[in-house]
Each structure stands twice: as structure tokens, then as C-alpha cells.
Amino acid sequence: MDQARARALLDEERARLRRLLAAGAEEQEAGDPEDGVGDDVDDADRRNVEETGLAVDQLVRDRWAALRRAEARLDAGEYGRSVRSGRPIPDERLEANPLTELTVEEAAAVEAGEFDLGDEGEALGPAGHPYEVLDDADITPEEQHAGDEDVDEPPPEPEPGLHVERDDGRQ
Image 1 (cartoon, rainbow, N blue to C red):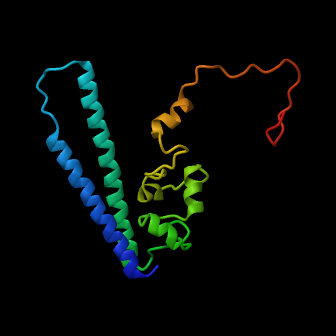
Image 2: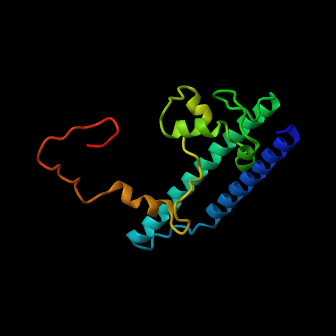
Image 3: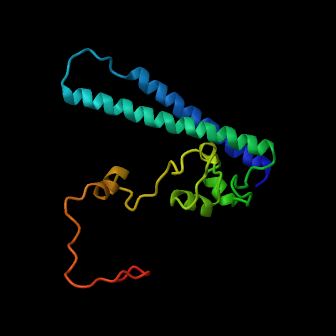
């Protein structure tokens, strides 16, 4: 990717982050002042909004840090290369996420826990990507993963007899 296009992508990301920060500040200012009236549900809603705001704020701060690192790589002539291996990152990936620091394969390996980033982990930011592709666009991530955590049914009891575990996962 040429430097001018890379700079334009990073400038667009900077403008987007500024808009997110401004919108967050407006929401905080528009928040209802606590007047002591209400019940536990009202208080829970307020806490939920506060915690969501803090989570979004952390994501924006992580993106700002990634933007600074990307600009430093651009200035050093290293933008568009993996910070881990130095391999080129495809332009299509950079167009989709101009702050990306790893190739698709490396990012997948990090998310799968296949390698430890060590001290680089903080420089790379959180292992998970801030955006998640859902199986169904009409549900929230919480709804999609709701069945993953609390399963009320116990695992099936093994049938009596001899069980041999094979390398390929079959019995």
C-alpha cells in the first residue's frame, strides 16, 4: 500500500475516533442527574449504562493506542507489515482495518492461543478483535453466546463397557 493511501486511512480512523469520543462526551453530559428517586431496577439500568460506557471508552482508548502505533510504523516505513513476523499484510486487510498489526494467520493463532505474545501482547492490544462476526446478524453477541456458558444439562453418562480414546477423537 502506498504511503498516501495509508495516511488517508489513518486520518479517516482518527476522525472516526474523534467522533466516537465526542458522542461519548455528549452522552455523559446528557445523562439524567441522580435525584434519589427510583428503585433497584432504575439503579441497575444506570449502572449498566455506566459500565457499557466504560467498556466503550476502553475500546476507544485501545484504538487510539493502535492508531499511534500504526502512525509510528508508517513514519518508520514499516506500515503494512506484521509486527510479529514482518510479513506483508494484504492491502484488503488494511483497507478493512487500517490499524491491524498482524496477518490473518497470525491473528487467528493469537485468538486460538497457539502462541504467546509475551511482552508484545501489550503493544498489540487485546487479542480479540473489537468486532465480531455473528452467525445471525439479528441477534446480539450476548444472545449468540448465551447457551455457551450455563448449561443446565449434565454431560451424558458413558455407556458401560470398555472405551478406547483414539487420536482422531473417535471412540
